[in-house]
Length: 203
Image (tube, rainbow, N blue to C red; front, side, top):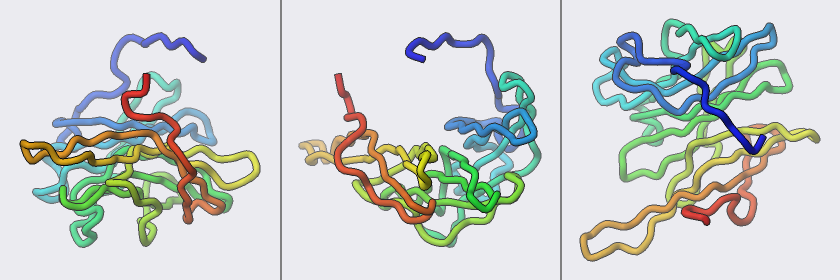
């Protein structure tokens, strides 16, 4: 649809020590048995370690409007992995050919490291196992992924690609973020497609 009407009220609000400080970057998946599961990034006083900047939680709904949070953390940063030592965010979930589920997400470490996209798999969407390696990296950082399965198999991942401009007199470099895409035959190996899907400040 080219016209969207905002619905009244909030679908989810911070309500517990895990998400009372902030919740953002949602991604929703339709459940095979009916209803929806919403994955989102949050932070609160119950964060798993002091320097943690965000982790992924979940909530379920029968109608897509009223959501109930589920206990526990679905996926948390890993201090032992430099590329995802501080924050995981912007989850997008798809069904795998073997019946499991795969989550793609943006991973962040120190500010000196570009953001990357990683993945995890689950058989029940509650307990997630991080897959080794990085699914997509490049530009001056990528993130905010959204995955779309393709009719002929494989899929396309849309995400932002950050680019730093020339450093100014104040020592700062402007950052632009455009939408780019990458394709995969198997959900694990991705290759960027040429060009931009949407340029920063386009129009």
